[in-house]
Image 1 (cartoon, one colour):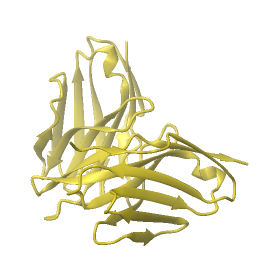
Image 2 (cartoon, chains in turn purple, cyan):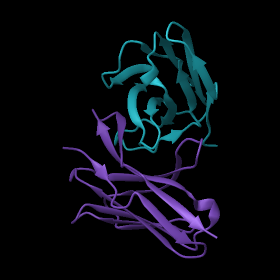
Image 3 (tube, chains in turn yellow, brown):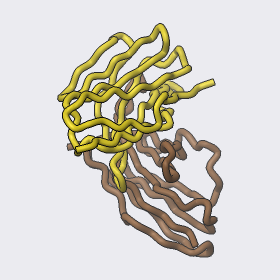
Length: 115
Length: 115
């Protein structure tokens, strides 16, 4: 079946350290993935995406790695800051009839940054 | 600009009330979405509109009635809701592309409480 899951429900890191949030997906046909950040009381905020023809993509302080062999996705945050504290969701984007998208979200990881 | 707006921010309603949630975007996106998110859970897709036509209904009860009056607006009409329908209702929008893999951008959500 289709599912996207996370290994760690909660991740606690010290300010300034690097954070790594992991995600496993089960649909081998999936070829587009998105990471969202959701702060308390807000909607999910797009962070970074990656398509299956890539294995790494970098943004500002964030890097997404994709390992299609083991169906694994990770989000790396460099020099984690208190403002990075939030729930992080990976999402698998499934084309639905070729014209619209369906997002399958992982269960989410709470990132807690300790000062 | 990647802003999706939603009103109201909070809504309290009784089980016999009729209310509407509103969503607006001015990014020229032709796909719009409603999601439901319970506390500490990932968002779950409810409806998808593509070019102002309903393209996906994820078996949502008829007490939820979506409407897309034009390419910028999306409504969700609520009637005879149950307490278990209390949740954060999220609107999102995206481009519609042949690949069907365009990023979805989310609004801040409407926090709904059904008494």
